[in-house]
Length: 228
Ligand code: FES
View 1 (cartoon, protein in one colour):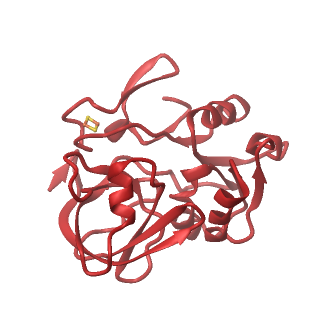
View 2 (view 1 turned 90 degrees about the vertical axis):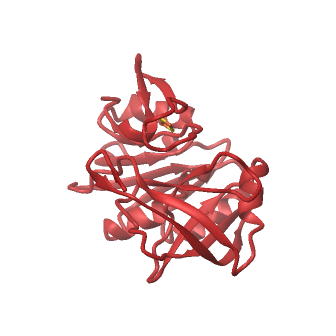
């Protein structure tokens, strides 16, 4: 399947396991014929019993597997987190634009479930420094997916501990965090979130206004630089 000149596959993948990581779940799937793609790209996962698939960025890509970190915040994500080994999930991807990895001094910055793409990104960038922020100590248990990271828990924020000269920032997290990072580091690469129905530019369900411009996050993003 060619989407915008890039190749994305659609395949039913067997569940290897689902492991708790603090309040989140790491859903491990057999890789099948799908490519892991560029860090920051995403996959559409069909949740059992739900009409619309859920967009998930790849968290880890161990040999033969694709792993997704999921926050069980609704019926679809809960259904994905409750999948047992041997069940099959229909997956489409990789989709969208990932991070630009041609960097001098990368610094990873993530808030909450925004940690999801960071382990795969850290591996691609040979484990650069990282700053992670979480709402609670329990959420912060997810920091074990990124050993060596600086971790803050609210009321402290990731922007409180960014170095004075942060280098090449790659960030993922809730919109207020991304806006705060962008205010401090205008050239940061930011991975935005939006509900998605199709994942490849057809439904306009993912349109968001960023810096005064309307963007389809599934094809223009999810990673945007300089809000351009
Ligand atoms: Fe359909 Fe983006 S999710 S256009």
